[in-house]
Image (cartoon, rainbow, N blue to C red; front, side, top):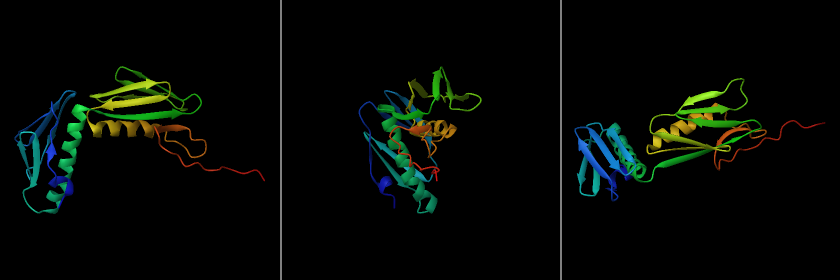
Length: 177
């Protein structure tokens, strides 16, 4: 049984959740998000409380029960507060630049890496800190991971792109005899 699925989801003030067919839509002050739910999970919306119930005891149904509950909780936080990831670029000559819906990253390659910023995500660059924010937790995390993947931090000098506060284990390197 899912611990997350059993707990009722409380809707905050200013957040509306509606169910039409198999699509759940969450609307709030920052925007709206929608999710297509399989028919093996029953969603009950009464007032400011949402409960999820599995239709049967199949393994996939019980797994998706907690997953859908977690996704809906993330949607509620996203449409009220939003999500944000910060990435630090470290290295001599390494920099990034955001212009419109494009993020240009120069990290020591012979060419700049140009990335399209997905719809619904904003990207701000201040000095060597890239701030990625949006209302969809999955989209923000995935785009931040894609940016980090351009040049992952290396263990000898620590150059590369890392999450803010991420600790990189350093190696000693070659020793002189």
